[in-house]
Length: 133
Image (cartoon, rainbow, N blue to C red; front, side, top):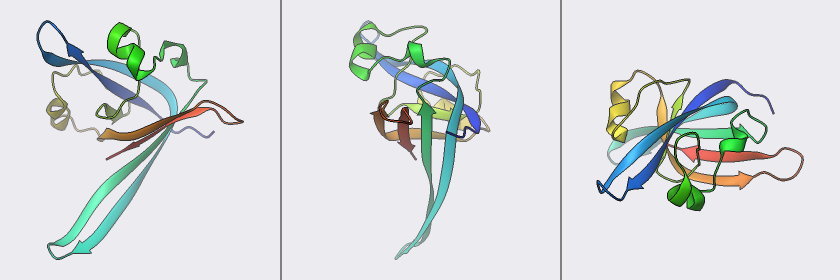
């Protein structure tokens, strides 16, 4: 798989003591990102959006720190990462800690919200596939 950049994944986890979501940051090195610019004409005029297609090879250096979402929810913490709907992905390496996704709007880096994902770590090209907007 041809890779073209690093990404930063912000994983959401519910904190039982504060009753708020906390966000942990993990930089993934060597992934493939494609951004498709969609446009549609409607009664309200021209609507446009960016659709993100991200493929994370299963052999990246951080692959051994991956936990499925169910395990991450109960046992994940510092040094672990997962992919789940609602997580945020920043294109490039980002060192900003966040308290809520709106904090990413202050940055001048492109980012997306994970809207779909699948674990494709089988076959000749094992990877995680992520869709976002």
